[in-house]
Length: 613
Image 1 (cartoon, rainbow, N blue to C red):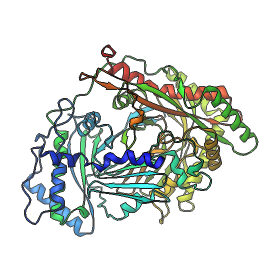
Image 2 (image 1 turned 135 degrees about the vertical axis):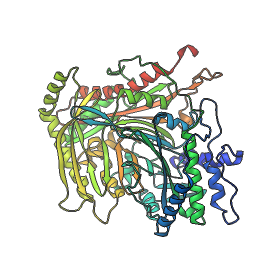
Image 3 (image 1 turned 90 degrees about the vertical axis):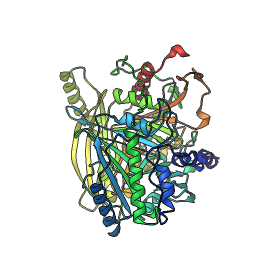
Image 4 (image 1 turned 60 degrees about the vertical axis):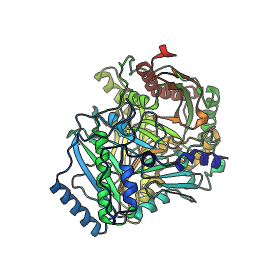
């Protein structure tokens, strides 16, 4: 039944994607290139149709415009010659890019230019960051967004569906390990890797999420799908989109990089590829420079975002059942079966606030290193994760356990006192060191002997409501492995499973009542360069988009303010150790969920007009 459900959820992908539908309706942009020459057929005609912007919708989408300055003839000729030279050198995936002023645009507004407000099932993403430091926070340098992936990969219980929107194909296959599918696809290409003009950020490649249950492809004997808890949402285990079009905001230099990657295997000639790629890039620029900008709801911040909201009442486990699971877990710990296990429960909140409005609110409530709005198959993720799952940069593997928590002080002086209390807490220190050892083990599986080291130990990181103890473990990736191997070794990290990790996950299967899905898995990007940056899916709200989660409630149905009710899933957990108190662990789960739900509170108070109900 699960497989059948997924097949139904993928049916919309069989219809032409937005750029193909635009072609069926006719041209919608003033940027249509001149008719192709006789020798330029095949991919060029379809590609030019895809380059067109979606039809204008008043107050929602963007019209094409010619406000931006195109390259002059000399610059175009130089770019074309460089493109041909790169192709002649054997590169099969080539970037075209422009750099523009960003003072007329924000990342949130740019995302809405590319993705219509009512197109909530279109795969797309917006990644932002607030960097944490020992004394406070700094705005992250880059924000990155993308829409209309050229390819998608959806994995569910060993069945993998590959949709190539460029080649207009869909293929289903069985895979023991679905992560080999995107890896093998990338190995078919030879991307032009250059630092000339490209920012030190994600510039194109795979974006998506890996659920907690992805571990079942690795630990097939001890953690098979057959022993997993109930799969009540039927979400993908993995969803990835291949983004050839990426927009990168540089908040330090106040400029925006707009990049389009050209796949030569989609064209009959290099000239055809360059011409089509240039047209697509200019069409993307025109949408960002639109004279008919989309409407974003404005509002006042009416809540004290530093306070927790009310406790969430609906959960997959009753309070008493969760406490019984804590007692059961402690019995395993006292018997020497495990040292720690992380038990979670999934809370539910219903809201008329749109997921993108919740994301806008979350940026204020809980700014974090990994802010994400990710529209995927079957769900929307709204995240403010503080922690990486794994990172591979220039073949250096990074694991950064974050464990040990205390509230923030109301003053700087109180904050310092609480910091010392946290660092002197023997229980929290012991738990953190245990997770550092797990991180060293995960990094060591894929690193060259002798290269694994703890670069930072027991540092303090401050967030809006709490501070954490963090450490950093690094290693040099073995020559025979890729970033996909590093992810396979790390997922899920010990901070969301326990120790020993596999045995703890076996107990999680026994004690939790539903599959975790995205929670405690990871989301992020894998670049054409072979680098990877995957955040741990904590402090992440999951909005299912399948029709059976529609609540049938709406208001103002006949007005421009029409809204539907959304189901928001907020999953939180607590690390259970020998001296854990069931009441405290239950309260910790409730507090974490209430803190995350504060973003929904803010979105409702800011963007909803209940007088229309």
